[in-house]
Image (cartoon, rainbow, N blue to C red; front, top):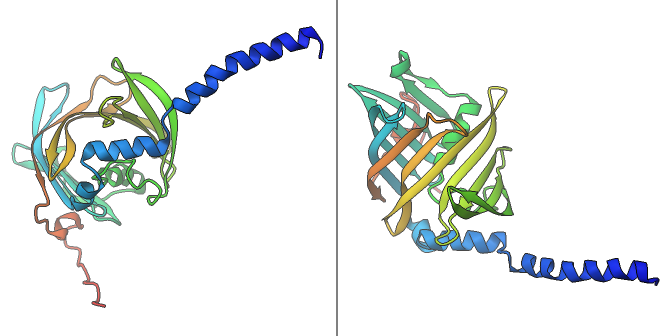
Length: 256
């Protein structure tokens, strides 16, 4: 081997060694997911959390309008969110199969079925554990993308590709390993949309830490909705009928 080939070879080997060491020190997806679950209270506490009811206020138009807020989640995949103002209540609900809504602020007081695209966000709201727990069972794929700055915090960034094709970028706080931001990309009504959700002020309910400050809106937009949760109740009795389309007859499952 001539000297002019040997020098680049040695240089490449020299600079590659720290690179490999750095990669080796990077956390794996499984490690980060395990830390995320542990940070929330552990797998046992998460699995024991069957229902979650959050009560508070919804702030819109940069906080100029305040609505009453109520969200009820029930395993495995049911959710209902309500926003109330001046005797009117907007409802969005998903019963594990179908989604529906009541939109009185838009002059629609009767319940309406939701489209498959509109239901996607509701399906994500059913995840009491968040997008990372049981990701394999959910049919998702997860990839670690290193760290990225989130308002001055070098957060761990994971890319979650859901079974329906939607992509969520999940940012974990490097110290506590809880979600501080989720950016979701999806196609809705034929158009691409990117929704940014900032999460904070975690409080414990039923042994599990859940966010009580949630800011949601299109990425880059200054006009976002802010949910401030004043009360979180774990494992409260919940009637399944609140998730079903009004008037829908539920056929009981035969006993085995």
